[in-house]
Length: 93
Image 1 (cartoon, one colour):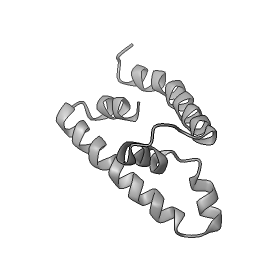
Image 2 (cartoon, helix red, strand yellow; image 1 turned 30 degrees about the horizontal axis):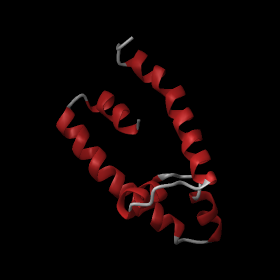
Image 3 (spheres, helix red, strand yellow; image 1 turned 180 degrees about the vertical axis):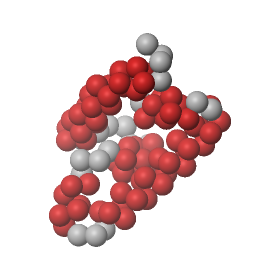
């Protein structure tokens, strides 16, 4: 979903792919860095799905915990509610 929104902003498929590929990796390391800053930040970062999504794809883990599934559902709902605004601003609707 984030990659689809990125394509709408960039309007160049290759640039959007490279940005999404390195952006997800960069965001993963950034969230892990933020998580290492302290207890409060660690608790907040459990609601950002980048780190556990990366772990799912790299380690071959097959299932999410209930908390991770709820966090992903909330982020998906937020991005889906945000998408029509972007489509209207880019004149796709």
